[in-house]
Length: 469
Ligand code: SF4
Ligand code: SF4
Image 1 (tube, rainbow, N blue to C red):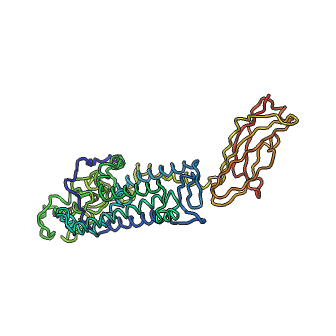
Image 2 (spheres, rainbow, N blue to C red):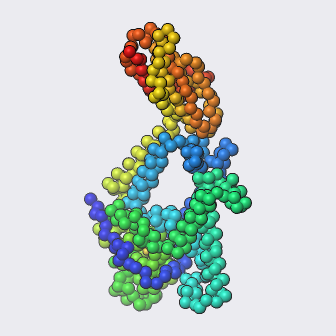
Image 3 (cartoon, rainbow, N blue to C red):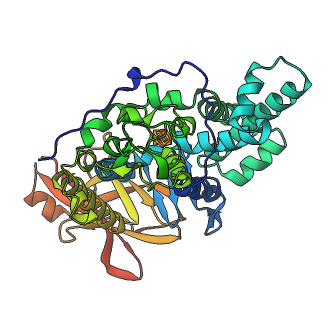
């Protein structure tokens, strides 16, 4: 059974100076930017999509409707949201067990926005060396221009993010018009500013401290990994002892491959030294791999001194001869993977079988039961009907069993997309039946169907019929 691996806690490391990470190119840097583009194209693009003449994805909290392309979700459907959260958690567990903190390094909004904000910083203030110099320089026109420009660009980007976020809860096209005409409501303005400021602070000013001291996931990630989990790791056996000479062709055979250039530390967005071992402060971005590979190539040594590797592989106790797939497929991966598959399948099946018409039956408490002409009995109910589709529906209501009860008048109604309506119905039991069941509470069912398909019920809801003594 693979052991849980020890990870140096984030508290063991504290940045003394402000971190100015050096830019680096390489496979991991490209992958990070691919994720930035992908996630941001989705985030900023989705609210502008249209579906059947309305916003395709809209969480309309006022109307208590969630529009998801062709589906309309009511508060009763919150179970699907809960299922989505469970799927996200299991996906995170699964990915962590296989490849460590891949979420943190590539898809977490904190990482993604920090990358974007660092890119903006780079445009205004230049390389990491220039930024350090600017920190120490006295205030003057240049510093004012560069710092002012950076903060202004950060704030504009933050506001755009806040505006987009609010656009998931308030239809984004009217919202745009309101914002441009300075007619947005008090709460709308508050939330745009709040999320804008939140983005500005988190990605611009707080940055890695969120990962180190505020994120709960960073705290328990160690319990999800074991010695066979792939992580960004430094190969001690190959790298140590570090050597002074740069050229690999002229090194002492007892020397390791690390030339102690510290480039891996300079590019690290959290400012840690991966050569000290696996650390909670490491977000698994792989930039140190890019940096070290670049160095190894320059000194004519094999790349991969820092690489994605498991602890057992680095300690020489691994089943390294087995293919990668066999190495990652182990008990905890199977467990997380199977649970994930189960919950996804269950959610998809339940969601696709979700009825498009919903009904709540509420008994009229003030008129429990009443005797009407010729000894017949009537009960009164309020039916709340909801159309959870994006098209009009004409509905016919009926009550069963038809040999015992019937409606005093035919009930049919038309519901628009996502519309809900209440209708009061009187259910009557003829005198002969009422005499037979006097003093009883009988089970009945309300059924709702489409007029064109008489014998198929869209929805069915049980209730009771009271026969007085
Ligand atoms: S140690 Fe490497 S992988 Fe970890 S955060 Fe720093 S650069 Fe990224
Ligand atoms: S980049 Fe590579 S060679 Fe340079 S210090 Fe880091 S591990 Fe050593």
